[in-house]
Length: 432
Image (cartoon, rainbow, N blue to C red; front, top):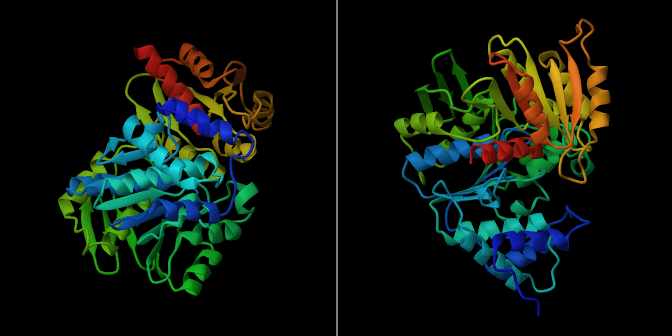
């Protein structure tokens, strides 16, 4: 009989070692069997959020508003930047090591000889932890796709798909129609299914209609409008006016906020929320790594934009920031991403590229990134005003950018979560 780990780092190391080769194993039969053996179920409304981009922001807004309204909120969000505990929050507080170890032990005791991937195992553990805390509402972020994601063994009371774009093509398909079908897999018969993508794939709409889900489409069932000072939400039966803009910056955040308010409209009888709680929830919401502008000079921006859709939004947000003499990029990516598409979207806003290798076997080589960057070099780039350099890790790339940037310049740390996490960790250690 194997002795189980007694610390969280040891548990995570064990789970990683079990699946050194296979990180993703599509299909829900194994997860469902363990879920049933555990007796895992939620005794409260469950909101499930999928999407190519925007799902983390939508989850964070829902959590913030519902906490202001006095509800006990359980949140599963991913991935994490510095500590695994970031993935599980109860009432806005990170889950403790002890609570996570107990949850891991519960999954291990129930899985018998069923093989689970790292993601499946940890997803079951965190959902068990959240359900055991007896929250008033649970918010679950889907990892990859929807239909075959481990989170989808739970039947959500409200499902949200934020956006559908090209990403994870090895698993989800190469078109928005194929990916839209996968994301629509979280919809349930007779239950509200919200989509805040302004141009939803026909496959998503068709699947919702085929299973008899109650489909809420942006522009048809709910909408938003606004000026520079404030914005308004309109749903099927509820209007919310004179709302503050979310503290999360960026052009797409009103799409995410509107989806969150549509979910709250759906649940208004079970979880009533007042106007002031919505306002303060949006103003107070925080989410690291989503167009996160740090205080101080030079300006430093963290953004986990790792696909062309997200990179276009980041480029638009940078364009709205005002004048900076030079912009430095600290950029690293996984090799299975559309690296060229991301760089193309950002090329017009970057003067100096600091390219980083990432601590993952899937990391794109910096030489490959440099080649792609060179292809998008502006034709009018003058000597000394454009450059590309390569570094062994994000911390070294960031240190180089900091050493060169003037106080009125800006540094954009973007790409993979590993890029942002690497710089976050380096900054944290330098402050201690």
